[in-house]
Every structure is written in C-alpha cells, then in structure tokens.
Length: 296
Image (tube, rainbow, N blue to C red; front, side, top):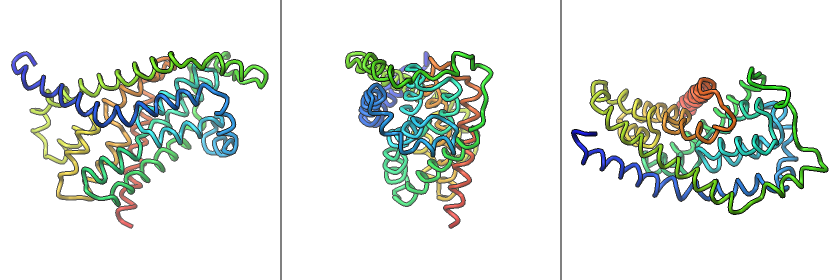
C-alpha cells in the first residue's frame, strides 16, 4: 500500500462503488423496515401461523420463521441484524440466537438470481439453481443445529420476556424512529467499510493467488470477498464447476460477509468458531444440492 498508493486508492474506490451501487440500495431499506417490524406488535401476528413449523424444524421460537423469510428476501447481513435485535429485545434467548444464525444468515434473490445468475452467468436458470440450493441448504443447516446447546447460556438467558400483559408496552418503548434511523445508518456504513477493506485485501493477496490454477485462485477470491469471487468464477469455461464453486462461495459468504454478520451479532457474543462452522456446513449443503440440480 505504501509502495503503490495509487493502485490501492483505486481499490478503495472500487469497494466503495460496489457498496454504494449494489449493497446500499438493496440492503438499507430492508434494515430499516425490518427494524420497524421487529419493534411493533405486528410481529407475533405475522409469525403465529408458522409457530408449529419453526418448533418442529428448528426448535426455535415462532418469530424465527419470520426472521428466516426476511433474511432470504433481503440477504446479508440483515438476518444476523434481526437475530441480534430480537435477542436485545428479549424475544429470544442466547441459545435461540445461536441456533437461528445457522439458517438466518443468508444471501437474497436480488444478489443470487439478479447479480450472479443474470448479471454474471447470463442465465436465469443458473440463478434459480443457486438460490434454491442456498435456501434448502439453510433449512438443512438449521435442522442440523436444532438440538444445539450453548455453554454460554445462563439461567437468565433461558427466560423469555414476552408475557401478554407487558409485551405490547415493551414494544412501544422500543419503537423510536430516530434510533431506528441511526441504527440502520451505522449498520450499513460498517458493511461498506468492511467491503472496501476486503477489496484492498484481495489486491494485496493477488500475487499469492496467481500462483494457483485460476479455478482455485477465483475460489480463494470468493472465500475472501463474495462479489469479486463470484464475478471471477463466472468467467470459467467449465460452467458446472463454476456454478458449484459459486454456490459454496455464496453460502459461505466470504470472510468479508462473515465479519459483517459478526459485527451485527456483537451484542449476542456469537462465538466466531461456531459461526464459521455454521457457514461452512451451509456452504457444503448448498454445493451438494447444486451439483444434484445440475445433474438433473
């Protein structure tokens, strides 16, 4: 960075541009409105019809299904942000939060189908294969962690604060528009900072990546930063291999996205090792499903 400042300034601008024109317009509105919905009494009504489904599949509270749906629709790192908000509001326990991160930390259709499928692979079919694999991979991952027990959980954490007589008052106190705006803005800025830094990190490691075959080099780029890695993988001539590797990269999220999510989960004290294992397993499930769908 000291020897070639112009190159890394250009990398910074590319990272800021990627954040401003791709992440900011799609993620910020979801962060804002999901924060509002998680602060008002509408949430229990929306999640009630799915209460038995969330309990049977994931052994988590009814509200986890709503979080899962919003995470799937909006993409990284909104799901992690919602999990953290629900924990801070006393709607879920720390153990519930740890379970929910296994299936609520997901990418969304705007990125997978739109940006990757249509924009990079020039194929809607590939976009839907990647999206379906990603969703079902998350479901399988959530089922795998349904019996998870955390050593961090205390007796206080095992208590739910959702008594019918006090819940509505608590929600009213939590609804603060100025706080929601500030919270959403700071969250999206932190995402932009991490994306920009990792664009620079990839440039720093590019001499090392160039030592590997391009398939591995592009995959390693994706392990670091999901957007750049997916773009590079889409240029491979072996489409099935490219799509399979891209499926892993999207579900793992890359180190950049992992840090974004862990930033959102800071108040939950999410163990980094556990979160990385969850993302690796999600990536493996998604890749297997992608390979099967491509064979079909």
